[in-house]
Image (cartoon, rainbow, N blue to C red; front, side, top):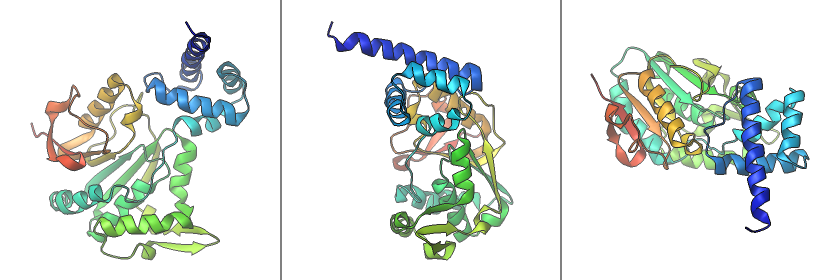
Length: 279
């Protein structure tokens, strides 16, 4: 056994204890997240927050509630962009929207909305396709700071060039500049985009069914989950979808090995868009 192995085993124990402490004290459950991902993020948190060990970080978060959102910022961080993977949004626009347009009212859930980029992408898309006024959008995350960023709708202006190109590639029917104003290096997205949005704290790990949705978009969230938790989340989506509703996942995610795979049909296979089987 090398000198490095015992220390890594000790660190794994520290991580398990910290995750148990987070669940017991604050009811945030990361115990079934991918250990490799959690370990990488906790190491970063320990270093950047100035702690000598994971145990010291655990003591701080247990005794200082103000440390919790700072730690959650590391455990739940997601790098996103508007209209990310433009072909996914083009498929929503060209393949899913024609089905949704037959309904008098719609519900869309963006699960794990992070800073809101995916949410605004869908709201803009629905506005361009004439469906926004009959749709309620639900944006959820376990990170309150992320929800606050999403609700503010303010992004660095330097990111908007990429957003704009993604929007164009997604089949955008207008200029993205119509939806924001620029000032002091920031792009402030129009408040009207939030008129039909409900922001809410919701955990795919511990919380229950969320409404009856026509479209659920949860992209690049489940890649951080172990298989049992992936199955729980997919089961939650299945039970939250209306008859023949749609589920969109990230490019590296799939239903193929899920216990709930038979409850869905491939709708746009290459874009990981599925349709709930009608029963």
